[in-house]
Length: 89
Image (cartoon, rainbow, N blue to C red; front, side, top):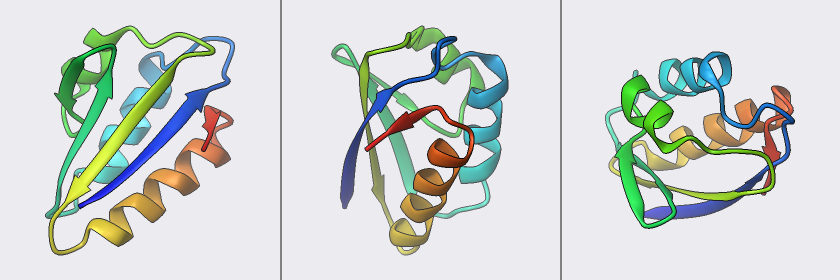
């Protein structure tokens, strides 16, 4: 299992467009991937789950991946969060 925390730096927080990109990026992977925010855990492969968190700027989320391709999955998450200007590790 891999676990990593990110501080959201985007002024809009984790709104629909970047949330959709994150879900799309992790969906092809076999590993189970979760996002944790304020004691709530959702499947990162679910747009409704991610949007239900309501993550705003300045808050920290934790992403966990567990499975055969967890390292590749987390590398993709890192790449996307930085490329989209969503946050920092």
